[in-house]
Image 1 (tube, rainbow, N blue to C red):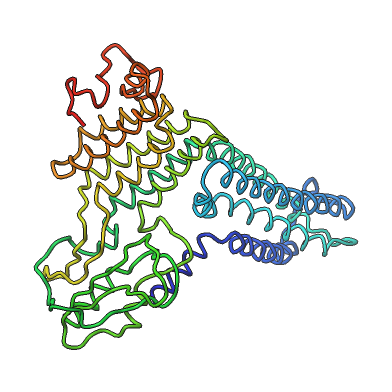
Image 2: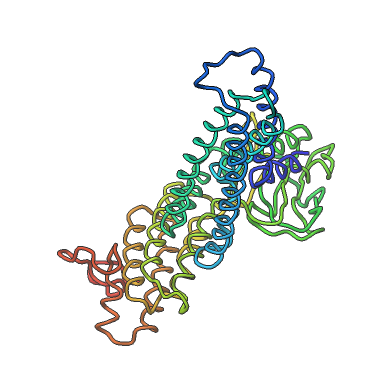
Length: 437
């Protein structure tokens, strides 16, 4: 089924052992190939090695690769501690997919198995000189990859880098043609819908809806001339036996098992069809930075930068409450619940306002965020933006009773504190040149 294949792809993407295993097999295969070529190649005397020299070099390479593997594993453990302690545990799902990390492990293990395979054949006049030289070249490549990995590790794990990466990933999903399973153009003529569902498809297991195979679902609904209405969207938890989708109309309904197999259910959310997951990670980092144990409002401000970029993208996308997926005849076949701008807005600012209302730097940056969003929201989304801004102003008022300090906290500043003040806007909620919240 498609769902099983999707889960398999997710497992492979997050696997830290599969590519290194392939590297180990390639290392052994390369050693066998080298031993075959050695007897057909005459190297210059300057490129040949004695048995003792070859044995010493290969032994050193094997020991070095084992040590480097331990070093990379230690870095991996440090990443886990850093992510769960200062970032967001949910970021680990993205970090596991880092290709450079897997390539480094595969190269180290491949070099190790290559050198070890050659070492077993060194003895007397049987010296794989070409292989020893190649092993040295592989060590050099491994060291270059290690430097690249260290550079990635030291730069990519900064909160601002993580926030930027996950926000951009979420926006890519949001603006992609396949977002939320949009297999066809949204909105079409109504399909065959009756007063009640002809069939309810229930979830086969507990878990989170990770993705749906929209094209397959539209094709199945068209084939049976029915409409499939999903009750869960990617990112939602569904309990075993709960209604996952409802099927309306149709003379011959598709099998329940075949429809359920078009929805991938896993243990945790994934960003593949769930752009809100990226925003969730950004907000997690922001509120963790605002906790009394960390007390780092500057990091929270950097995360609000990414929240603003994400919400402006949502406002431009003008998402609807549901996506109607149509077939070739422009007939609605599948209806998928979709998040609207107000949903993303609540996700992006509610918790930051709750935990950061008393932080002046955070308040000023949030005020600037509302000003920025006011430039791009549609008329239909303005009430949601006004309500959120009103709640923000009320929270700051409750947290900062002093009028002067409160006015300062409500003054928009894109840097939180320290931004240009030559033409400083009026505080949010005052009504001086802006809408009264």
